[in-house]
Length: 279
Image (cartoon, rainbow, N blue to C red):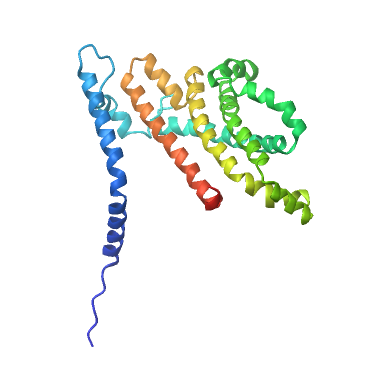
């Protein structure tokens, strides 16, 4: 009896990967073309007489060592871009987590209590319009240290979209849901976990996605004006003071990539938690 030869597992995997790539190919072409056009225009602008900003070719040439060795650590503030970004991300993670906890809690309180909403809403609307940089001198005067001051700036910047969207989500709970909870005689704990949180979850995640972007922007601004701390913001400011414009541009590219990845991460978490019909 003859048997057919088995196809190698590797060829099956490669075929599956190739088919997925081919399927996504039409979606990859437009951004790649747009990026190439942008880089070409940037390079042409850099070649014009009197241009002061380096083009992409010069940026790569000037920062080749930083690109190849992002993990170096010579102590103090002299660290590779990986450690600079990691330090900034750690600050964002701490403050963003606190902002999410406090923002969701206050948002639920305001959304469920008309009295608290009337009392606190004007104050919150006033504070949320203050730019992140304006909080820097206040935080430094109050906390006296760069690190906690930077954490506070991120926290106060990220909390408002979480708080406001949570409050709106709670207020938008359909009356039918509340009527069902009364008919079933749900206690506060059951109402909280079975009615309030599931109904407000899409609004909460909208606030969380907005807040993660603002938190990343805030830490860059805070680190630029707070000297003596490891972070991508201080790296930019230090490079600018030393007239290393190419390093500034490279850091901006990394900031944009990290910001995009953070937003995609929150979007992925949202797809795993929020039901599809509520997105």
